[in-house]
Image (cartoon, rainbow, N blue to C red; front, top):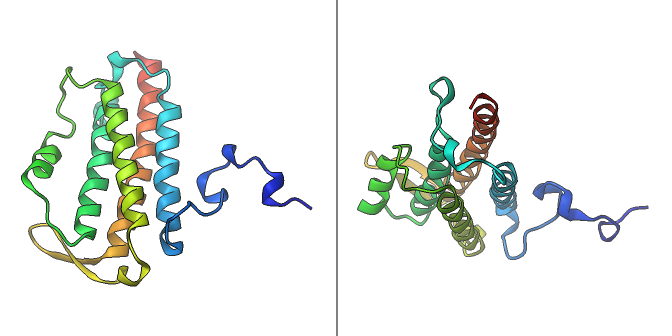
Length: 176
């Protein structure tokens, strides 16, 4: 009979690897999703040409947009989860997402994503389960949500953009 000690878990998706150390049980799925997204992006863009980062095949979002948007969404959703509103820097960052800028390099985009993933994991570790259902207000309209909803939305949203990014990266690699 196989046990987890008999299995090399490093090749498995994160949700099959067991609990992420220090993350509360109810937030494990969010941590798994965030870690899986980072892994797939880093692996999928390992040899991606810098010259294609802003290409938009058939008008879809560029790889660079996804790499800007993913850490931005994590930052914004996790800020709301803390009960805070966005500051001017966060609002400016959101407006700049996807605006072509050849000074922004792929390595910097990947570093920023990686750093934001680490911040998100730290916040998950620091979030006690007893606050997960607490009310939180989202945006200028103060749309009602709660802590767990915001944390999970951040996780699932970057998972969605991971898929889009990977498809776009393959298409531009073939077309250009």
